[in-house]
Length: 59
Image (cartoon, rainbow, N blue to C red; front, side):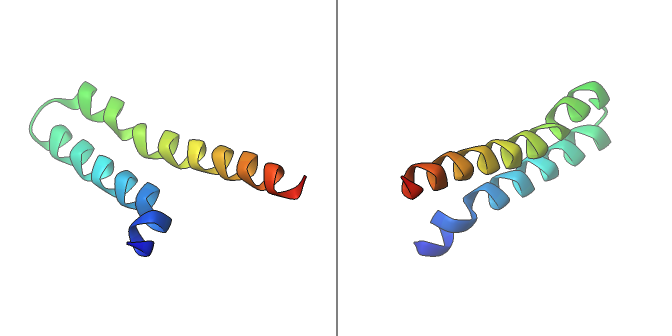
């Protein structure tokens, strides 16, 4: 359970990337490009939330 708690953003990003590739090669290119932006967004939000959490721990 600790593994999933720590690495869920990476797993979620990887699944979104695979979904994007499947959509691209199935013919839905615009949708594939849109979904391809999700991993970047997921990882960026993860970094932001970690920064906020670290700031609150430091107080």
